[in-house]
Image 1: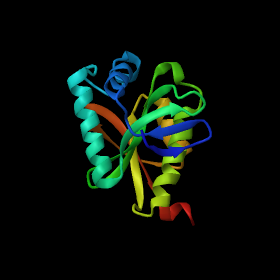
Image 2: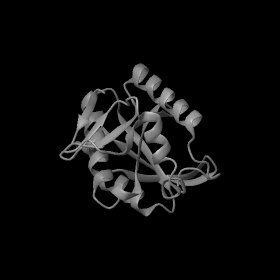
Image 3: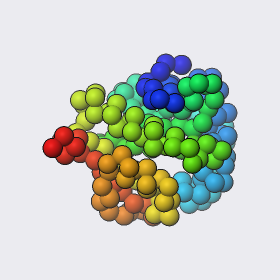
Image 4: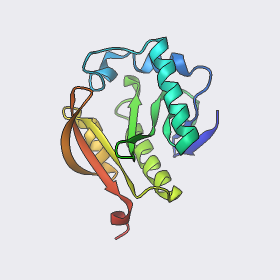
Length: 172
């Protein structure tokens, strides 16, 4: 597994051979999926393999993709995070953590690291993010990293609050 970025406590790395099992564990949690899938469909082996394939292609083609998130001190898998391309071709930040790791500042820490990493690439003018309208914790993370609420829209039949951050605005 190759390291993509590190923060004080976290490491974002490419998926390894345990990726399918890790995604099934993460996306097999009702607490995680309630804000991600209106149909309540958990990941099975087929869906996990498909998502890993999509993210690997995005990483190969654009240097983006959702990646494996671990604690640096012990290598324990805590979730996934990264960017995907979202219409109309803007990077979209996303993160999901296993519930046992909620409330420890990990989401904000990796979101800040991802923001800074993407800006340092110099390839993108900014990025977007969205969170379920009832997911107050995730919306707070996006606001803490400097994103502005823009509009609400349905994504996969779920009401989402969209956010945007333009890098040029941050430097003014």
